Image (spheres, rainbow, N blue to C red):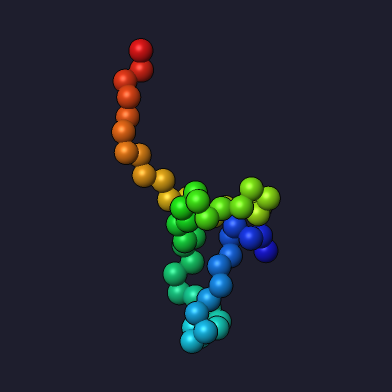
Length: 52
C-alpha cells in the first residue's frame, strides 16, 4: 500500500467490498514525491498556447 493510493476512510464507513472500484482522482497538491504509485490524477488545463 502506498501513500499516494490510499486515503483515510470516514469513521462511519462500512468496511468490506466497495461496489465502485474506480480509482479516486487526486489533485497534484495532495501527492507525495516519495509516496509511490498514483491511481488517478485530476488535472485541469486552464490555458493552451499555440505551438510556434
